[in-house]
Length: 254
Ligand SMILES: [Fe+2]
Image 1 (cartoon, rainbow, N blue to C red):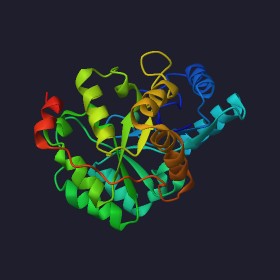
Image 2 (image 1 turned 90 degrees about the horizontal axis):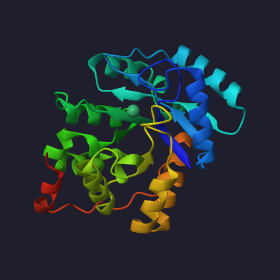
Image 3 (image 1 turned 90 degrees about the vertical axis):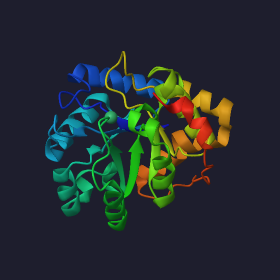
Image 4 (image 1 turned 30 degrees about the horizontal axis):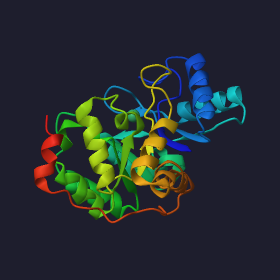
């Protein structure tokens, strides 16, 4: 499996606090059947993002763990004015493994103004935004139709593996399953931060998806699609979204 969202690099953000934890996270991921992890430090008002430092930490971690797991670089990209200015100049600083896919995180407090135009501009730049864990975000709970609109515009969606097991609460779990059923999920990733409360594990969620949606969907969401993203290819699995009848979204509200 390929994990495109993981805060594994030590002492950078709210992920692994030190290298010992990062090494243990790598060991857990490899034992769980993960072959590649994209290290995606935050780039937001709380955490500075320094590609040279990230590269240095990635190389040190790769050296420490050997070739049991491949560590690549990406970013958990916040849609701030400064970040958007920077990505216009140098997109590969932020994208997954330097290709065209870009993890996009929303704050819980409100959509940035001009968000539709932000996505239009990123897509025009040949970048492919991947909206991270909408199932955990109250903004989407109130405006679920936004997900469908942006997927139809060319964005993709990543759900957090642990949401499917209810580890972010019942509402996030219901939302994650609804998104899956309505073909609005393209990636499932760990968004791991440590070895305990937010571990880098995917296999349990993969079994859940295989039981619910079939092996083809599980393979696409955990292997084929994320592998294509880190290799800079078009996603092999892009099902037609099934619009959700509005009355069903009440499960989704807080
Ligand atoms: Fe994250």
